[in-house]
Amino acid sequence: MCPNHLITTDIEKMPEPVRRNAATLAGRTMLVRALDIVPVECVVRGYLAGSGWKEYGETGSVCGVQLPKGLVESAKLPAPIFTPTTKAHTGHDMPLTYPQVEDLVGAHTASSLRDLSLALYRAGAAFAEKRGILLADTKFEFGLADGRLVLADEALTPDSSRYWDSRTYAPGRAQDSFDKQIIRDWLEGSGWKKTPPPPDVPAEVIAKAGRRYREIADRLMGA
Image 1 (cartoon, rainbow, N blue to C red):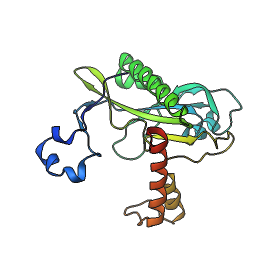
Image 2 (image 1 turned 90 degrees about the horizontal axis):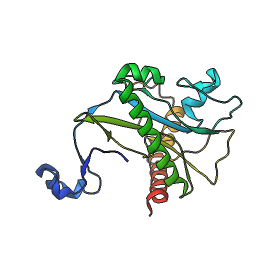
Image 3 (image 1 turned 90 degrees about the vertical axis):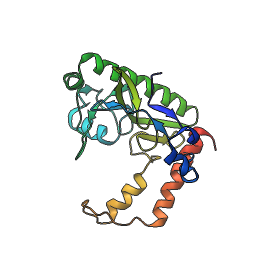
Image 4 (image 1 turned 180 degrees about the vertical axis):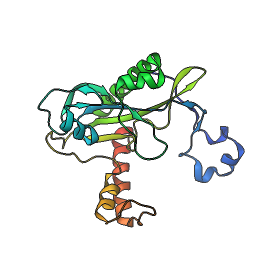
């Protein structure tokens, strides 16, 4: 659908230091091209959850996109919406309206980011839905190579996406996600004050998160 940064996943085609450690790196390593990263996190939402749900409750909109009244938590939106954020080097990413993206990167690049992000979301959501998974929201990153937008970083992974099981989906409440929420929940309940260093996460919590990641991988890609 658009160019991406991947050059190869074949260890034998990578530089010698990688080949020398093939036993450790094979199957988990990508050789990618360097890009001039666009300073916008391209978030697309198909459902109302997370920070989007919170903002909707306060303003009736998400990142300047006005939404219908009366939506409940986890509701499916009438159509996917582009809700970008800043790409912060420190601290938290902050929501951006579309006009702010235009001011940041120019009207042409802004429209390309929006259109590509929405198209990629729709393709990913359709792929997942056939496998009994709902793609609630996700984020993409893009860079420039020779003046052309290129998809960068991860795409449609549980780390950058909110996936729900369609069998248990029920609007009006928070949903169980196939992501690192298991780790977040333990940290929230541990008493940690969110200043370094973090506490050691128990092995059973890590194992539970690992099982959740393997389940979504098997559901999406085949066992």
